[in-house]
Image 1 (cartoon, rainbow, N blue to C red):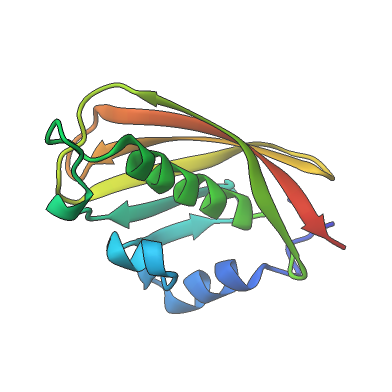
Image 2: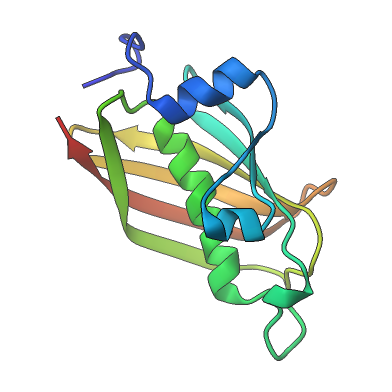
Length: 151
């Protein structure tokens, strides 16, 4: 297992972000439709930041971004925090995601900042906040438990 002291075998996602030295566009279909990009990942601190820009296509009937999309943006950010410390050849899947909606999320650019709270052999615990770009007040917060997969 890769630990804080043994970072010799980074996960390919972390390697790509570190190699780029700047924002990296996310490539899966949902992240692409949300205009997702990984802004940075810090393997020493176990933190990451991801940006999204959901448009009007993600509004629910009340005129705000659908809660499932808000949860998805948080889940991506929490996962990026997990990828800061998990080694190559391993991955994980979210087994529990808790989201607290604090204020309406409207179309526009949003940032998720996330951190590892604890990483064990089989479980990763992370937490984070979603904010409108340029603002400090969180619109939603989330915590996740992720199960480690692989060697």
